[in-house]
Image 1: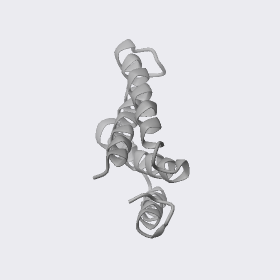
Image 2: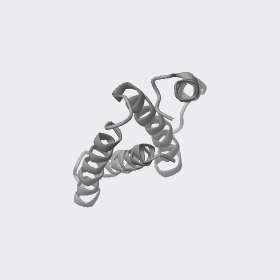
Image 3: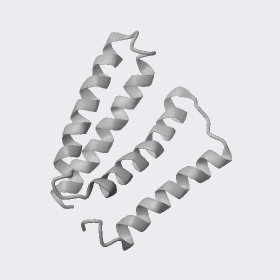
Image 4: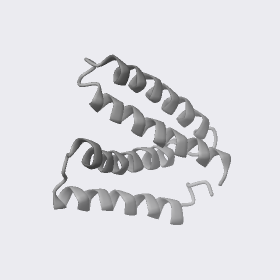
Length: 111
């Protein structure tokens, strides 16, 4: 896997950690999760900046935000018991399909 995609993958992972910590911080009333949130988001933005040296911003952001949405929905269900209805799942499936279309067929995506 090219290095810029490795940066993007870790940007997605750290963003997901940050968002999970944001929920766990209970509106920044719990210090540990609040600190983790800030550190994880900082790392995520740094890694995203490294990925943006090669990947066009629109493509990188589509992948970053789309996969982040799906991962957070899964974590929300597994960790926080937050269930999604059928149409929310359909919407997320369409986001994933969009990411696949961009990656497989777009000449704008770097391979």
